[in-house]
Length: 176
Image (cartoon, rainbow, N blue to C red; front, side):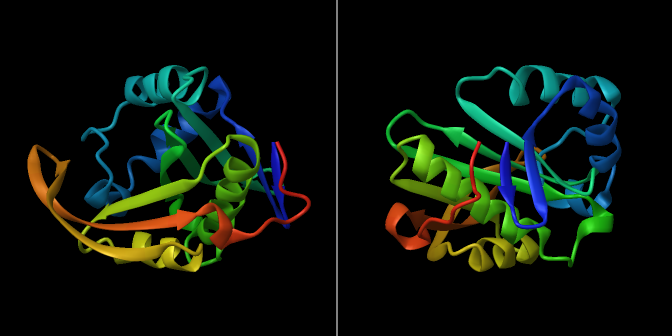
């Protein structure tokens, strides 16, 4: 687990399947995140059981405040000292500063415990909310990548940013 001020970031459990399914119904999330549509409970079950739990190439956290599930932050570990961060926030938690705080905490934890030197962020151009989160979390915007992501079967342009180990600093209390 990671503690970050008011937030607790914990590993997924199978008890999170219905919550993942509920959040993944959100049209705002579906606009930019490559989740199946319609999103079924089977999709959530697969995500939780096969991607979020026990996958050595990923580290996934549920973000909570006072027991309320607010968001998800994950890292795709590449095995070369780098990772790619991904996140989404439940509709009721948006605008409360949860995502930037949680992303910073996961990145700090990853730099301190996973031997990472660089964490990359990518999002479809137009996903302004994701870009704001990345910038608030300390990511430096590096530019645009042409047709780099696939969304709903179509290649789309992407923003790319990165965070280096020495750009974040460390804070006691961020631990797993």
